Image 1 (cartoon, rainbow, N blue to C red):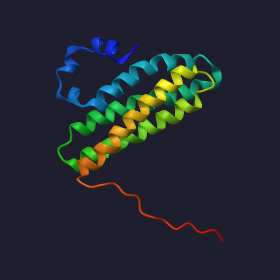
Image 2: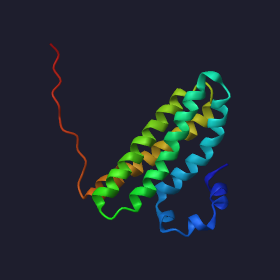
Image 3: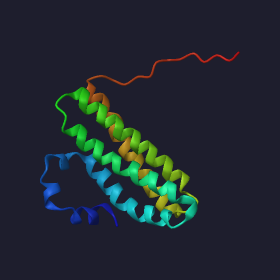
Amino acid sequence: MNYREWEQTVPRTIKDDALWTVRVYRLALFGTDIAWRDITKLSQDKRTIALSNQLYRAMGSISANIAEGYSRGSGKDRARFYEYALGSARESRDWYYKARHILREETLSHRMELLSQIIRLLLVMVPNQRGQILKEKRAAYETE
């Protein structure tokens, strides 16, 4: 199923909410829905049952945290939940990578690209909500 086909199946009650206008939220919902097939496949192999559970939790957490953040009153509060969504997106990408031995290469490539797109959008949203640019402090690493 592609995004356009999927969008036709989304109930009007979800589309009528202002949250639907947030592109990253729509992509996260799409990702969660299409992940169901992958999760089902992973849960059929004893070696990857735990992985399927982690993937299910991480994928669902992306859109849930975006929705939670969208409902917050201050930019700082929104940014915190968008950061949680960012963490879940990165975690999901990690779980997909670990599932590469079970899932088809085409499937894996699509999911990794979708999650990378979500991550890129969230990396813009977080600093915008905070009103500042995120910069990591330089750290000196020494070995003795």
